[in-house]
Length: 199
Image (cartoon, rainbow, N blue to C red; front, side):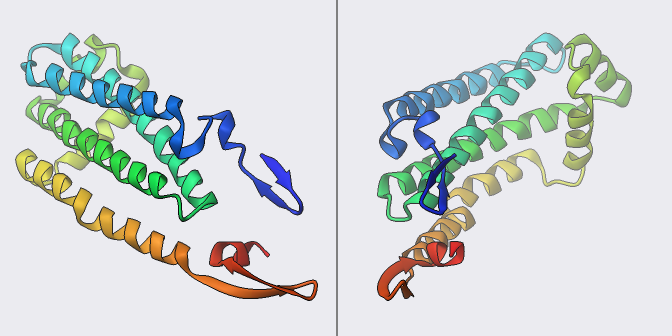
């Protein structure tokens, strides 16, 4: 964190130099897209008896999730720092798309988990060496029991990208565009609502 006057600012260049125009971020997102494509190919070729393949899929999905969270958090900070960063908003939308793809792939894992009887599920966890994330997997399996059929879940997730996620981005952009006149030390400045809240 960098201090500028009395305000603290994130040192975003220490993560991806160049903010939303970072070449490192661009490569990171391209790699994320490839990982998602590979995970999709992997899961489409799996049958329920391939515990090793499903175990690899789980670990790949965990890694992809970490990348989505890192890039999403970074872009959230970039947009918070400059609400008028159009490339930042575009990347935010792109990352939402990757998140939806990840969630759609997770429905495949949920479907696999639901088809296994409890004893076979426990065998899968042990055989795939996933004991360290057993709690997460068991919780995912329990939550999946309350969801729609996998194909309907995938449809809902696909529609969400251009639906409520898009509306949230529009709302955030509009709220970020709001400006007020603020008097400080005898001078009137026009500042954003976020800057006003930090005063």
